[in-house]
Image 1 (cartoon, rainbow, N blue to C red):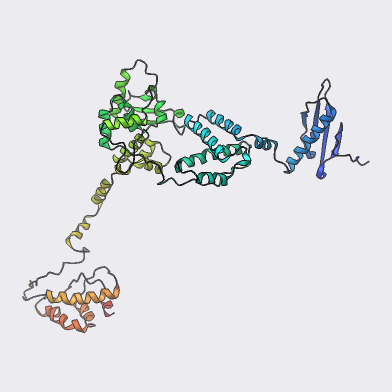
Image 2 (tube, rainbow, N blue to C red):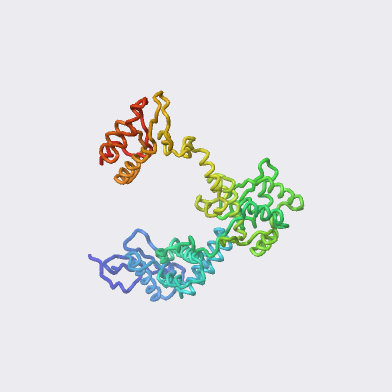
Length: 492
C-alpha cells in the first residue's frame, strides 16, 4: 500500500512527511516519560544521523511549529539556500562585540600591550569614521575614501589601520563568523621616502661622548647601543638573564620577552660586562629587573644628548630617539666590517634587508671597501699610468729623431714627418670606422700596401719609412699604437 501523502506544513506526532523539493524527512515530536516539555527527533534528507533536540515548551502546537521551522532551516542550509546559523548570528552582532572577542584572544596569545591597545583603538576609530555598525557595512571603497582624506597621518600609520582591521576580519573568517575579508583587495601605501621622520645612528665619536658624560643613565644607553635590545625587551631584562661570570659574558633573551617570541643569546663586549658587574655589586637583590626605574623618554634622551654636545637632529634631518640606539648597534657593527650574516643574527632580523634599513649610510665603510679592491688588482694595471693603453702596445714614438744603433748611422725615422702622415691616415680610418680596436703593430711592407691607397701620403711614406731599409737598419716591426685597424681595412 503506498504511503499516505500528508501536508508538509503540518507536523504530527509521530510524522513522516515529504519535504519541499521532493526530499524526504522524518521528524517526531514527543514527550519523554516523566517530562513536561516536548522534544524533537528528526533526520535530514534521509541521512544517517538522527538529531534529538529539546523544544523547551509544554504546548504541543508551539513545539510542532518550532520543530518545523528548525528542520526547514537546516534543510535550506544543507541545500545552500541559506547561510549557516552561526554566520547569520554573527552578521547581526555589532562590530564592537567581535572586536572585544578578538582583543581577548590576542591577550591570550601574549601579544604586547601596545599592540593590543593600538588594535582596539584604531579599529574603533576607523569604524566610527566610516560609520560601520555591522560586518555587512564594511567595504573597501569606503576605506579607500577615508584613507584619501587623511592628511595628518603618515603612510606607515595608515598601513597600521589597514593591518589591524584586516587582521580582525581574517580572524572572523577563521572562526566562521564571516565569509570573507572585504579589505583583502586594498593595497598598502608605499612608505619608502614617505616617512615623517627618519632615525639616525650615533657615530663612534658621539657614542663615546655619550658614554663619558651619560651620568646615571649611562648603563641604559650602553646596554641598548651594544646589544640592540628593544625598549620592551630592556624593560623585562633581569639580572638572572645575564651571564657575567663566564669567560665569554653573554645576555640570554627569554622567548616571552622578545618581539618574535623566540629566545636567543647575545655576547657582551668586555667593557659592558665590567660595568654590569660593578652595578650588580651595589645591589642587595640581584633577582629583580636590571632597570627597575624604567627607561628614559625621548625628552630625557634629548637633554642628555644636548649635555654631551651631540645634536638631536643631524644635517640630513634624521633625528634620535631611544629606538635609534638599536640603529646605532647595527651601524657600529657595519663600521667594524662585521659580516652580513653575523650582523643579521645579532640584530635578530628575519632578513638582511631589514638589517640594512637599520644601518646608517654614514657608518658604512665604503672607502675601506675601495681600498681592499685596489689592493687586490693585478700589478699589470699599473702600466696604465705610463701612457700606454696596452702592455703589448710597444713604445711611444718619440718626438725627436733617434739615431740608429745598428751601425748604419743616420736617422731611422723622421718622426716629425712621419707623425703627420700617420695622423692623416688615422683621421681617415677612424672617421670610417667610428671606433677603436685592439692595438696592432704593422710591418713596413703591410703598411706600404695600405698607404698606396692614398696618393697624398705615398711619397711621404717612401721618404721616411722605406728609407729606413737603406740606412743600415734591419726591416722590422714599426709600432703605431694610434692605428687601431688591420691594414686591409685601410683601403676602405
